[in-house]
Length: 146
Image (cartoon, rainbow, N blue to C red; front, side, top):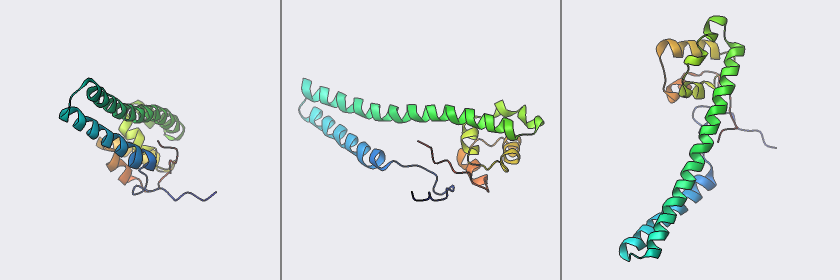
């Protein structure tokens, strides 16, 4: 099996080509065609086609949102467990103070870097995921993202 490319801030975002470049354009084209047919010749059938096209867009949207929501719950649990293992006692008391955005970004920080970076993020009230990810110097890859 080929080795995975080392992950960095610049290349960590995940696109699924069949989802982002095939399925979504097909669903959007279907929606626009269904709406066009409905507005140029309204009937029960063109209306139901438009409703189905909207429903398919919603299915694709919620499939992605629900999967990311489940992933966020796992990330929150994993990062809190990792923090309990790596933090000094005075910082362990603040683990519940981290927001989901902070935890999601901190998952990319190496074990060695995590305690000091986490303290800095809490002290400076930094909540922006991108800003936190840019602060990471030693990247810990996450190839399991959805």
